[in-house]
Amino acid sequence: MKIYDVSLTLQSAMTTYDGEPGPTVTPIKAIDKGDAANVSLYSFGSHTGTHIDAPVHFIPAAPGVDTIMPEVLIGPATLLDLSSISEAITAADLQGAELPPDAARVLLKTRNSRYWDDVSGEFHRDFVYLAPDACRWLVDRGVRLVGIDYLSIEQFASPDHATHLTLLGAGVVIIEGLDLRAVHAGQYMLVALPLKIKDGDGSPSRVVLIDDWE
Image (spheres, rainbow, N blue to C red):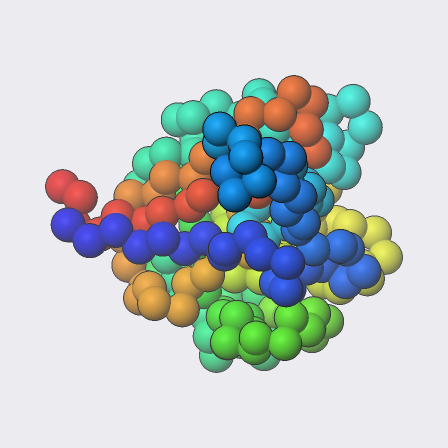
């Protein structure tokens, strides 16, 4: 059995979505200043790093991240390598990827993965995204969770947010910001656990893939 940690490390210099601030750590207590323990105040956006979107992220009064059931977040997942796609992943691309008919969780490795090698923290607007017709295709197939290897699953500056609305409106969990550089296409056991924030629109998450778990 091999475990892959596909989460980004939260740190001040990390890449964040265009215009969003990075994480900060403020010491509250410090041993080297005479306190009994180290205690820090963390500040970060709800969609920082590897994170999970809740329906209320785009749908008013919809459920928050605290309502996502663990049985959706933990289970077999299919990782597709679509690195040859330059812009949008379409329904035709997914049809040609030979996704197993019973796949409930789908992770998308794209050319976006190379952006994690950029230590400058620059946000790249030309990332590969999931087209709305691909979202409808996944929903019709009964997929319950979909993840991608950049900070949004939707085209940058989308005019209608159809990708998010189609997936979240159907109750499909979205994971964004996966680091899939070291992982190959195949079948894995997914464990993706967000913070249990009441009515939260999203949460940074620790996500791992387990190979040869059976």
